Length: 137
Image (cartoon, rainbow, N blue to C red; front, side, top):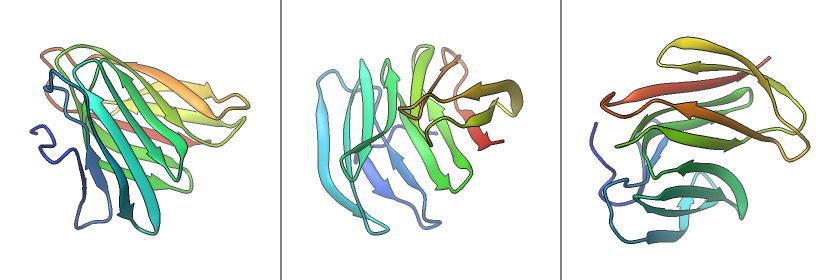
């Protein structure tokens, strides 16, 4: 998997890819139209953040490159790459329980609070591409 050179793009299957963890300086794309929504991404080596219609959707510290990000009614799925292990926060439904899969293995269940945010750690250093799937219980 390679970094997303154009920072934010729509994929043929309806997914999006975004972020570039190799950038030394901040870059952003605003008002990107995808499936009737407006997306905004800010990214560089220290952080990657995605918003949809002005609402929080994804953030990683340090920055990551994300490919094949899809949202379904029951959760999200994507592949992520970075130079260092990352703390990833995803905006989901408020006060719900989710099962989290990283690299195809269940990491157990996690519950979102009233803000709907779910945080997880992903070991990325020297791992290449890692799949992440979050499914509502």
